[in-house]
Length: 284
Image (tube, rainbow, N blue to C red; front, side):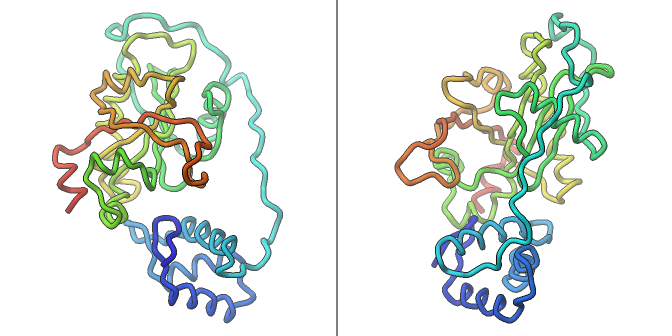
């Protein structure tokens, strides 16, 4: 049995994949991944094909010598450089106490505003801009008509031992229920906004709005949020203030890092229940 992208592939299934490729030599990699999803009934919780996961799995099978993929149709695309425009220039400082601010609104980023969100993240977030993989929701935090912060939520990490132990997950339970966990992958308060306790207030608003928006977008109601905070760079104070629970640290191996060796920064793992019965739901 070989495991790729959270799915176990039997020797029989890999043989079927080889046969499908032999029967359809005209198909490019993307089409092959779609056909493999249909053949193996590999689908997301909302019924859509797990096409991107399948594509990654097949690339890893190819690297391991299990299958022989056709050459890519075009050279690997490079990330487009983001140009910083006056739209994201610094504004006048916002310094008043959080209780004196007007109402805050989480505005979901639609396609027309996607480039603006990317530009803000690329310009002011310490990680810069990289696309969020898979299912995702992005938000502007609005004060009146002014953007003061940005949020990004995506699919949960496949494996994180402290999180899995805290929930009570076995491998099979994690595989079944992972779509019910969402990852707060990006959180940026713009640098000219210096308001104590603003971050925890935004996180509280997100905890109320994201489950409903995720349900509308993906027909899944998440019951738990997670986030990973780089140890040494941030203390996670705002998550603690918003009643998130610290459950441990990553080992710093990343998704593809070598076993037993640190290849990426170690991060603190924080969790926030969206349903009081989250543990029962995630372990049933």
